[in-house]
Length: 424
Image (cartoon, rainbow, N blue to C red):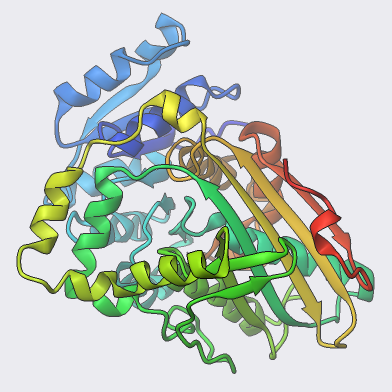
């Protein structure tokens, strides 16, 4: 049920941006009618977003608050954090537009926080500076709660949970392979976030998988040009999501291991992913394109030219977004070398925008409304992940409200995984 402690259940910072406006519409239409406010630098733009909401009553529109705040004004961020149970931040690039500052204000005020960042350098700063602070104040911060990296982190959790259901809670996982297929578009904000990493090229490289984890494990990541995905019966490529997703999943692994949780994956756990391509050659070409992107950013004028092609604030039409989809098929193998389980995570709608908005909103609403389902570490506070804050409640909300279809089953001994839980 809605919270009563703060003036607003959710404050959406960045509501006038491309992705922010999609989140705004989702929250306004939500059947639970959360108490919400839109926040940002320009009150006129915020009012335009609020007044332009479709499919909601006049009374609902008038109930939505408008708050002026800017990352350059620390006092305004604290005012925003004080009046919200949870703050959603959609203002990217996070490394350039104060993503850390918003998260810090929430951490200091002891609230909830979610964002869309896929920038490992920003996430790292939050882990280093804010995790202990959040534990002191009781704040729960869950960065990367959009398509980067919620589906990948939760799919790993779901598949590991199914495996433990088969073998018992003490079972440990040897490896997880996520194969995924996406149909979607790019917005100017996403491109700008990628370009912003030109000064942090490490964040884009497939290296340091334990960069965000409190513990170090055994996996050594090596760049790859293709990877066979048995659950699809085809080849997959490296993707723009791979480096950051891997680090977020290993943060979940490290937090669970450190807490000696019954949900932990085990000391030998290794995570891999690949984006489905039509052929091995296609996977090679796609991987090469993404792996050379950080080097292309060093070419004089390239970043500026790329930014002009798709400026921030621009993105696919709603008609284009409705045509998108995402399907993840995840296989986990136990340390016994025999037992395997598989899960599917499917959604219709552009995964980067229409559905990232839903993932982000439901992550925030989980923190606001589902405190009785918090994990032990969420009750203590900290910089957490989708799989470590309140994963089961979040999964339930995604299936109930966000149109996500999730399945999981034991596939031990199955030779053809392509025919099991087929994606449509």
